[in-house]
Image (cartoon, rainbow, N blue to C red; front, side):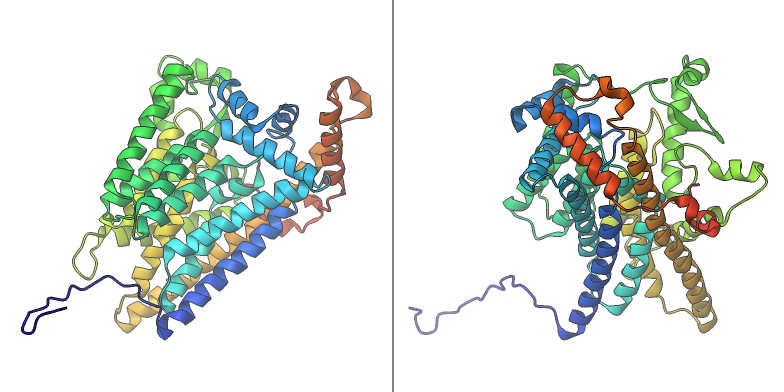
Length: 490
């Protein structure tokens, strides 16, 4: 009961706003674009046989293990440099799932990979949050950038036997989506689980932490200060456990081959040139890794465009890749260095700050040797910030002649990125042919001494080989020559 004459103060309560009729159309269009991209990607991924290199050895190792726990323990101690126990666990669970489906291992392994790719596309659409037709146009361009990046191919062309780079990309993008949310203890818990899962799957899973920190520093409060603090503590504990308890060490000079300049260095050549001054090689690898995301060169540490030029020919693939990257990076630079309508500094925006954090940490992780896949998560966030920059560009109201010039520039850039995106499927087809060809040498009648001794392992490997050889693929040599010139290996 309220007494007569009593003054009542009403407190405005938060409420959930429903999408208006003006935003439902663009939102539907955005998700439709994402769905079409995901379906095309999943189809190309699913047609690839299970990989032999870097995969079969892991599969054979986990099959005889009595449990997932045993696989996890094995992942803790089976390497002096790698700590990837959840990779072993996932592999064992997928093998068991294949057995449960009547020996359909291709369905399980490649289906898992295809679903993970669809999840990545869905998360990308989610974090972009297109709400207008201008946003949809920017999203269309950003999806081309995402799938056209040279670093994107490695997320799907290879599997180890589960692509841990893809796990990291999905985990970091999911963390950024959590940072955009309204928060709560469940969001903090989800971020902590993502960090733990990604880190124990692959060392690059540590990228989840700088994503959470950068998003919080940029003003996103979906992951609370307490959540970020717990994640920071977990990173410290991981380092102590990895180095202090398990005694694992990072890669050094001469442990793996790497690109350098216009060529490549073998392990012995690295030691001869940089054995006494490894910092020079490390500085080159870190700098070139970051540059490769912005300019698409060098790739794997090598300026492949210089090699092509020295050979007297420059295929269109180089012009398309480098030109489109320069145009998009210039748009991003314009956006980062200007101010928003409210005079706010755009470099402090969540997407921009998070991209720079991921780019820097990923480049540092490339210190010992160059590999495009290490920069794959930075490539994903490059596409996110490209969406933000293109949206800002489309929102301009310049004079007519400037507007016409910008429209022409946008059409040229988008067309180039569309060409690159189409090339993704050609490269996955190449990967499918190579994976199928590798299985032809497995269980060779001339090398029975190398066959698995365990009957269960032999049965699984035999079935995987049968599925791979029956998987239809096309020889790249039968494709038109122009496909290699526009989309081939560079």
